[in-house]
Length: 125
Image (cartoon, rainbow, N blue to C red; front, side, top):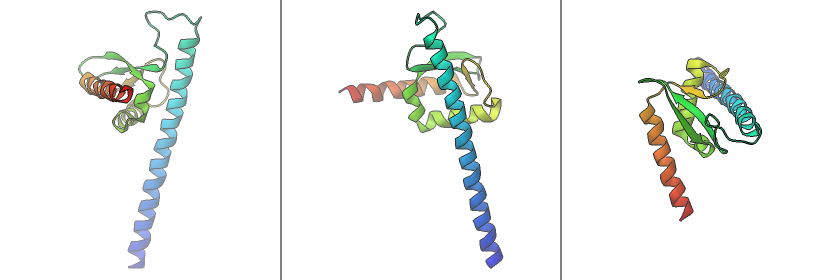
């Protein structure tokens, strides 16, 4: 019985380590993203057609053909979007340059952005 309890504690400990390792990797990805956004915004402080608006970052949904989106930084607080970022990290790793490639349908990002817009409008009321 003590052996089973010890195994359960070990399993629980391993899950916590795996979760904290994933969070650490996500934090590293977000720091890289922040640097890229600062570089894009800081280039001559002149927006171009390929630049990203201040307070946003670019993602590319790859399922059903690639489609590019500008996502507000505020979406980084959304648990659904964070799970998409975790999926991207598992699929492509953390060494992405430019837009973040996410293995999802464009409709997933569109739904997230629509939900974000509703929340933004409610906050402004």
